[in-house]
Amino acid sequence: MRTEVGTQSAPLALASRFSAVRKLSEALVAPLSDADATVQSMDDASPAKWHLAHTTWFFETFVLRDFVTGYRLRDERWPFLFNSYYEAEGKRHARPRRGMITRPSLAEILAYRRAVDAALLDALPNLPEAAQALVMLGCHHEEQHQELLLTDILHLFAQNPLQPAVWPGDRKVPVAMPGPIGWIEGATGVVEIGGDFSPLQVSTVSTFAFDCEGPRHPALLAPHALADRTVTNGEWAQFIADGGYREARHWLSDGWAWVQREGVEAPLYWEQAEGVWTRFGLDGRRPIDPAAPVTHVSFFEADAYASWAGARLPAEAEWEAMASPHDPAGGNQLDGPGPIEPRPSSGGPAFFGDVWEWTGSAYRPYPGFKPAEGAVGEYNGKFMSGQFVLRGGSCATPRGHVRASYRNFFYPHQRWQFTGVRLAKDL
Image 1 (cartoon, one colour):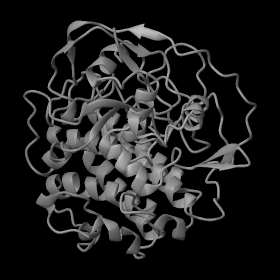
Image 2 (tube, rainbow, N blue to C red):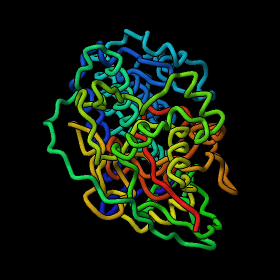
Image 3 (spheres, rainbow, N blue to C red):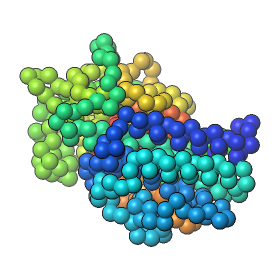
Image 4 (cartoon, helix red, strand yellow):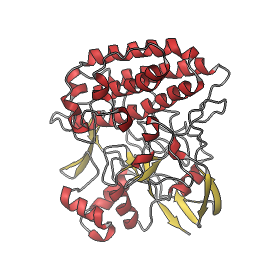
């Protein structure tokens, strides 16, 4: 991996980034009670308290334990609680039972974070390059968990009959619906895609990439076009009204079985009363904004909508080739605590922020992919089965975290993330 160091030395730049990332995580949980931070709403989600502890365990284990002579773990029992999926690190508490960890308390977890932060910042100037690279990986890892923390809180609060708001927001003036989708013709022929990944290396190159983004390689693109915006709530309501969830002809077989089994009739968090659709968000329950991007839809739903619309989902290579010239730090992304939701387009093609965009590409290794050595090699590669790639980041993705080559991935039925749809078509 590579990371920007700018005009500062690597340790100073890393210290600044590390401190900012750690502060944002704590700001995001500031509105939560200890109970809010402890409960787990489903097997796929984790308690907010666990996210705070797990990201700290990552730094303590892979940096302080492995590189700082004489460092002693805060509590030798806690790695069992806060290891996520690293087999090389031994046995761990079962993921579906994370909500049973009532102790340590939220206050103890916050104290744990501050102790690890102080130890790491003290050690950072003298860490070898490989350890500095792990600090940067840990920062990007924590940013991933910041988004998961938010979507897990949203899913948790949606289970509460009171449906409380995390950040009550002002009711917005309705925005005029965007015009019909326009089409942007994509590049054809051979294009280069993928991130510039260098395992455990810090350099002056201003890019970072996870191992699953590389290596860079050629991809062959047939004539195609991508929509100039994502699908809106208003357009999705038309899909519902036209029987989109009642007609099998638009659905993949597994998708239709999922619809029937789960009784799915609309995006997650949508409800209809007296003909009016509302959605639940981090700002509570509100009427849907017909001009805003639809979100919380699964791959199955995205694929069915594309079929209904006479289109398809983009291939990830098509998406990356078209998005590469655009600013990955632009768009509606997470800047700090506050109302967080997709927003209507402000004009012009936007490929980053608002909603993660489902692609039709399976999450598989690129040609020549090799996981890193050691426990961190478990970060991505072992999950390359049965999942689909999403691109572009969302309103809950920390600004500066994503790039054109970034590959997110989820199972086709999952939809508690801020996931949406951009259409594609063959030419």
